Image (tube, helix red, strand yellow):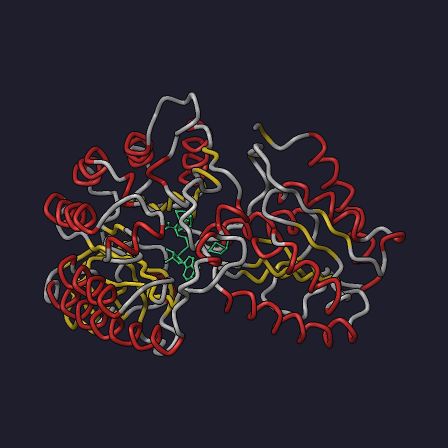
Length: 471
Ligand code: SAH
Ligand code: SF4
Ligand code: F3S
């Protein structure tokens, strides 16, 4: 644990000199781009990579023709892996036309040897590979990749794990008004289908004072919304001597001046406490959105998934949240086609979806991840059967979401304006406290503002609204 070390600072200075030289050679400022796959954790890591690249002298752009391109990968499902290999193939042409271009691949996929081997064999033009545990060594890797003796070689630096948490890396935030804040890293839950604990390592919590300081700095810098990030935020603090659990941390963050909204992700149902529900209920600036992954509504499947709760406990929790937190929106993740799942199990899942009244559900077809226990279960489900269950579930998810959305039609809410609408430039898109989107007339000058809106027309997963007044 600790702050950015002397080594990192020194490496950054060395990288800076390399970038200066490159700039002279090119006759312009070199560009860098980070392409992110996967979850909020990866998005936050990418902001750190961009911060380091920017500190080293690169201009950050969004283009796969950049002079330094990084793919920050995800391996949670097989289609995530395939997406990377498709993109890598295309970059080879860009590299041929720009001899100065460097290509790095990092993130969760690189923590699996099979992927690294495939890159070595089929994509030899990759210059640098590193993993999830050593992002803080990126300045040194950046320096090394430009050293003459490494030219044309693939540099690989992968760690099996780490108990270090390096604070104060440079960060380039994607948004001026909102930011993710890591509160913990890794996962100890070992759900039987999931690769995350293997590629992200054991659970480590940051010190509360580091988190609170970071949020204070963000607030001073104009950020009004923070999202506390962890694979299972409800187990924050376990195994440390910090003496505070997630509800208290959340309460303290919500008390920081300038923070108008606190979000958090993800809550594991097995560890969600009444204390947490009460803290959310008691503070208006804590988001009315709770993402509570169900995965399955069948007790038999939940047990085989190693989730640590059953349908009754889940439903009890969901209904308790709705009862205590007015206007709370529940969202969830569901996997269909887990080994051994039958049509009756899918029926049980659909039944929970109906009873819990999800605002939205992210539905996934089970993807076999080598190295996880479920990958060696013998009763893998026929893909056609899984697809059938998936389609049945999706229909109910859409109906339930539309019904939940309709419930708030005509009411007022406060929206944080995030962007100009991509399809209709006369509209802006804002996010309500319960995470739902509302599109309403406005312009780019409103980005970052909190605006009172009336939710006039519900449209399934979002609203069309009307501005009432600025707050
Ligand atoms: N830590 C979070 C989830 C991280 S992964 C949690 O516990 O909820 C995000 C989602 O991907 C999971 O909730 C799960 O629904 C899905 N997922 C994970 N592994 C999967 C697999 N092997 N196949 C299909 N979906 C998977
Ligand atoms: Fe994966 Fe389970 Fe950990 Fe979530 S809690 S990251 S699903 S092992
Ligand atoms: Fe993917 Fe890694 Fe996140 S596997 S979902 S990017 S933790």
